[in-house]
Image (tube, rainbow, N blue to C red; front, side, top):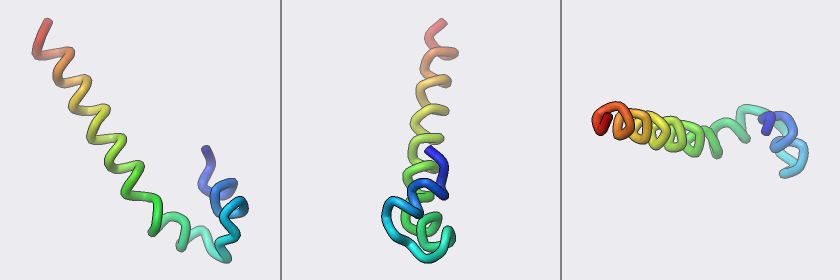
Length: 44
């Protein structure tokens, strides 16, 4: 989902506010995806 959509739905005045609050979710999901790929590659 686009950050701007989240910003407007939550009523944040600035995209920076939305990014600061929710960017950790993106980093966490990226890390989990990297771990899943590593697991697949290691176990082949």
